[in-house]
Image 1 (cartoon, rainbow, N blue to C red):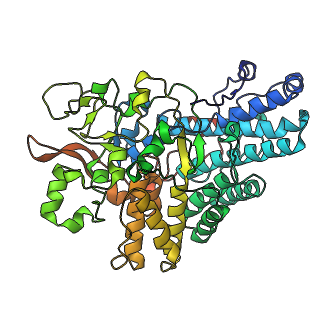
Image 2 (image 1 turned 180 degrees about the vertical axis):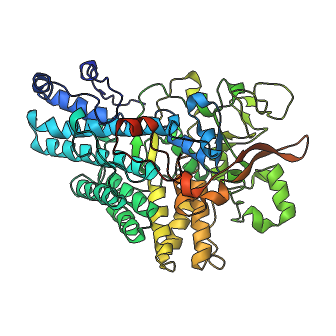
Image 3 (image 1 turned 90 degrees about the vertical axis):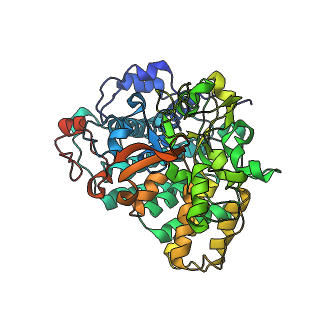
Length: 529
């Protein structure tokens, strides 16, 4: 597949990056600015440097790892991030995962501010293009603020680049941060196209992206009216749709493979041009990969049968059969096989045997699965050579539809025909039957259904971690033992780890220690010593 390559930012610009403190990275001289902010090519490069900060699935801020901070997955190998400390309640102000994301996002915010402060110095022959670039930079700046906000709570809003002399900024209030992000995204949505259609511009942030981010943030803060209206604006654009193929069994699975990479569903995605860590993050070791993140039994057991029955509804005897053999008689929601590789499966010609006494895929071995399962989503056998260029979708249309449906339910408009309409569209795309309206006809039952649909539809896409916090089930699902597949030698599930979580502390991440030391006006989040 031919892809358009973007310049990120030439080496000269980064010559001035030195100080680690997030507010004061560099301050080029007036002469340098006069030279740099001059040509359209340099302006484009500067804008692309802001895009370069967008997270990927398994590199950078690696969004797929967020599922390992939920009941969907387990992460090992601290060199890729010490997520294990968080789920055991051991993270503190020196926690490297939080510090890294804090630094990355503020670095990207600073790039955005530098761009906005200097873009008018350059000559661009098309004034409309310059206007578009400005709104893209503002939207990206809002997104990076939003990412920090949803992890750390109230943060310092930065609307301009700062120097050491004025860098001691306090945290803004929660309302101030929320209102700032929403206002920026809304104005950008009103001034950007619904989506970009030229190949070279597909990755650019659009009105659809801005509205999708508004819907996500509003849902997180239980602002259901705004979440609903923003999602509905995207639906009414008629610019996005669920990807479908002639073979319904592939419609969902192909979304995460090269064959379905360019599709009508992606709203916000990270363009990948080379490299990547997917094969060395999720693939079985016996296939030449490494397994850093492994699915739990909890997510495996969340998928319905093809008849639309949960394992709980089947009764204890049938549930026990599916627990031992999750894809018994090939009778599970196709999204399970698209997302998870099961023990005993043949993958790229290799039979996976995690419960044998030897072999590269033996359970618990370094670089092997820790649960007996493997993540299949975004794992394309073409990447076995280590030349990954598969784009990662940060937000897709299915999530927007689920945001809209959930908002209707929470607003007590659960009888709205759109609830069943869009749930059926998502389910049918994966070959699942329509919602049983005789059973799912109350607010409580539809809430149960939409939460399950979010979990299985968006598994390993970095969404579940936000959901369990905003639903108030964080302590419920993040305390106690985590289990994996059932070991056929003992007929017992694998005991993986014991987790410990406290919502009054772990709901927010700790402010990095180095920031507290550098900025006397910065305060720590509650219950972190």
